[in-house]
Image 1: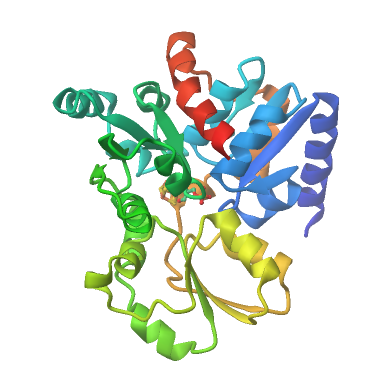
Image 2: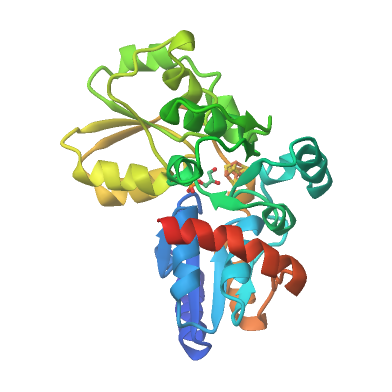
Length: 315
Ligand code: 13P
Ligand code: SF4
């Protein structure tokens, strides 16, 4: 590490204390951001941290919908996103107008939105969920209710299969995880016969494992997990090799958790460009100049808070 970087790290730590700030980072963030964060986690963990922090300033190293979620559940705090271009292809796969139109065709349906959505979408929803609690959230809804699940089709199909319950599913997808589905999973199993396979349910290959009719690989030793679910699994597992099907940023954290294990990304190209948009300099500028604030209009935030709170109460 060069001295410029050391100075930057020193300054970030100093301003953070002076301003009573907390740095929250997602598991896909670059290693140097993960290393300086106060908390690194998945979407659910980050929401829970935002809800309970005593800090006055939350610097969110992740993507825009995550900062919005923090702003909705921590209304008295100032939430900063160091780079406003950090979006999410999955969150962009449905607009509020499209959702309103879908709802108008299913007036009695309960709307369950994945956390990877805009605040406006959450404001139109009954429940929010993340990859770690989607099945739990859906199973809390009476069985006779029609459910509109959005926007991720792979997560939707996964939940549908786990619960054996029909859902109306929006056809959105994450451009990074969907492409992982193109990789020859069966070949990876032949190449790594001793490895456990950990798959994020957003992956194009995930639903194939669950929908027996479509199985094209052996699902033994395959686990569908959120990013924190993968960390927890590896921590407890006796296995020494793991194939990881999600964005490669998580490998930094996994290697820290179990340095003696071998981790193989199912696809080395699974890189989310949005998650790599924040660097140390932007983090420093965010803290110093308190930019860029993400604030959801009060009327939208008030409506969007309810589905998030319902989810947090269930988990
Ligand atoms: P997790 O909540 O599992 O971390 O997933 C968030 C995400 O954006 C996955 O692409
Ligand atoms: Fe969005 Fe996909 Fe990036 Fe996750 S990996 S933030 S779902 S674009």
